[in-house]
Length: 251
Image (cartoon, rainbow, N blue to C red):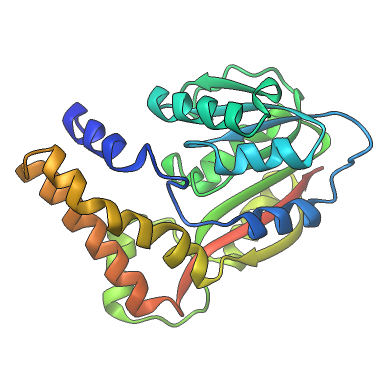
């Protein structure tokens, strides 16, 4: 992706509450399934945090110091503004860096959280690289694009093989966690409202203004076309895939 494409992506998404599917109820569900100790302060890394939907909720729900990591400073600036508005800015530190070059110390965190972002470095690469930053017994909460069953239409298969070849069944993702020193504790997948009402509909509502701001350039139209293709694919085939949310403990 060149700099212009990146700037267009930022322009389309930086004022959004979410940069991917998700929901407050689902983040809270993952929080409960992780069984975190609420009786003491926790140290958490939220990796690929975007503009901070999950970061801010975690800061509200827990006694925690959270390091919010994203490689786009524009998203982190937006996160800081929102954190102030929600009264949790003092609990959140932002860090602008790539998720595959994190400057953390070994066994620094009680929790590593990552919603809808690990695909940027690949699920197996991500969970294996991040494990050393967790304290023994620390929790990993990560969401990942996941097949909901073994059978799927060829059109959908070829689309995701092109977009993200690591898409797989939950059983395969759980196997990866087990091979890399985790004990899986829970799994669920995001329901359709996390995709449609919480993410895709707001994106669609921004298309016209986005194109106007960017003079209907060929690059801006190409980005919108890609987004429309992704949305149409989900609307047609939502029974076959979603984001799976995986909760695991470092052994």
